Length: 167
Image (cartoon, rainbow, N blue to C red; front, side, top):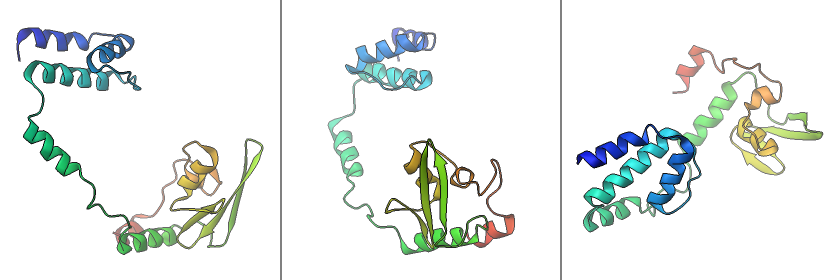
């Protein structure tokens, strides 16, 4: 890498985030959604090096596309995984028995989630975790157990002996 390029990359680290976003726009020709300084510096530095030293060869680009071809990806969850999830749910003593209706008033709205043997149901949709159901209901990340008052913040999920049993 030549001295000019090294100097330019070193200067990136001294730039403010708004200047980095502007530089990103110059280098990539599009806006960035991130304001994470380290990420911006690394992306811009990579692009500057690629422009200075040449991009991927056509052969490398074709190989990357072959690797990225997702036609062989699994579309269903392996049955062992689903069984393990159900087993984890049944081992968590903080969860009520299947069929229980959990309710909570949130922003002047009553949220009801039904506990199932293998997950949770909210407005007819099934969710694998109570946290995902709480997020679907509120639009915000929540610990589902804390949201519905089944646990206190920071409480551990399972005892050490139970964790070993389900691995």
